[in-house]
Length: 311
Length: 164
View 1 (cartoon, each protein chain N blue to C red):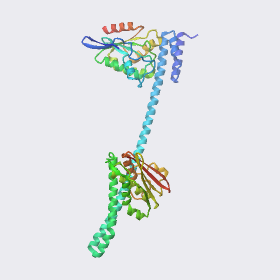
View 2 (cartoon, rainbow over the protein chains, first blue to last red):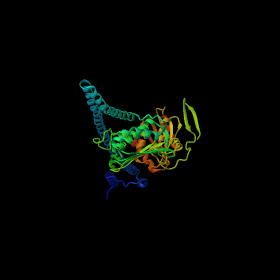
View 3 (cartoon, helix red, strand yellow):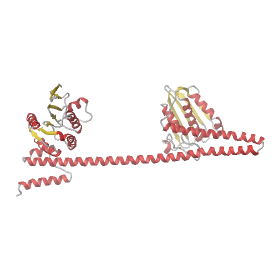
């Protein structure tokens, strides 16, 4: 027959063994029922010990989970940073190439002029000037466009666009842009159909809106594969809608979500010149104007860009 | 709730005359950050000055880290000018705090323990809380703690300890 002391020791050891295994069968009722006040105190102590251990385990698990989340988040941010750096490097390489191309042409033309001025007869010189000056002008314009795009990037990324809204007719802007692209349209032998018969007036920044239309039309011509391009402007109750549609090479589904991002030209730059910033800049201008821009496209069937602006 | 200001020994003491009457009726439920301002005030008002360097802390039935924080914030505010004090801890209606609440209490007691000269805990006939007070008091390093059956007994004990 075991003594009372041994029984109490056995009980305590049994509970300690359970607690060591993460369990506890001591209840508050059992503590209250216990006749021996010392044993009652010990049982409560064991119950509290079990609870404190469980709470410490819970805190440790939560800390571990939080550490994992932090580690994953850090990894994700690092990955994003690497992508951003890669995009920046790609952009710098592209910008450098784009800036060098017209500069090389211009250098060559200027060299020709210098040579002509020194050794060629005056009649020949006049012919050379007539032939080369338009090319020189185009290259200067191209350089100007590239520099302006880069300035836009700088302005947008350093704090956003500063728009100057005033009463503007979107239809008039579209007509002006199409007219400006006259030579380009002719050179590409593209038909541009306009559905813009009535003035659509709103409070917008005219110069920036011109840039949006320019970028969308420029893309439609560039990626339109020589097929017809349609531009329509219409007024709705509280907004203006501009649609630019081409029937060209379209945008692959996997890159459609990236086309409004910076430095993410949807098409290989080997085939199409430019910094690939036109849509991003257009998106930023439309968004800063309180509007939206969306794209619907299928490969080899063309793309439709819809701009909605509050009036 | 009536508030009376007494000028006592050059120290202005603010205490609640009707200490057990809460502005709002607090329910027997865990209170968290979703508590209304009235409920927060009522929880904090569970701590009051009942004499020179003597406080009453009437514990809620269900304690949470949130309620512990409110109660100890009030206690610290009331005792900020005292280098030593005692308090009566009324646990008559309190249930046993869980591990998380015990951890919160331990952390807050550590901040005031140096200045606490005596704690008189009122547990009535609650055997479990009697054992719990001894255990937690020991675990928290409260130097001088006494378990009492009634509030009157506890106040008397605390006053005696303060006068020693």
